[in-house]
Image 1 (cartoon, one colour):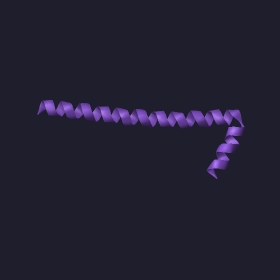
Image 2 (cartoon, rainbow, N blue to C red; image 1 turned 60 degrees about the vertical axis):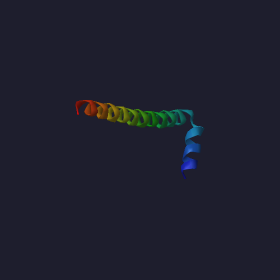
Image 3 (cartoon, helix red, strand yellow; image 1 turned 90 degrees about the horizontal axis):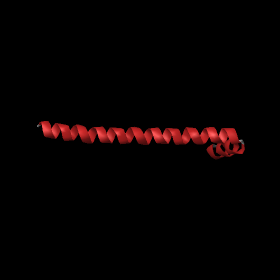
Image 4 (cartoon, helix red, strand yellow; image 1 turned 90 degrees about the vertical axis):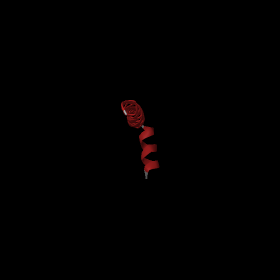
Length: 52
């Protein structure tokens, strides 16, 4: 079902571009948010260690 949807979407250039932008956009947002959380945790832990 998903494969057919992707095939039909790729047949039309505009839908393919929109899907690619949405997929890469969500992936980039997820990676950036996870990376930001990781950096925040690391720096917060370091600050807490220095405060203690």
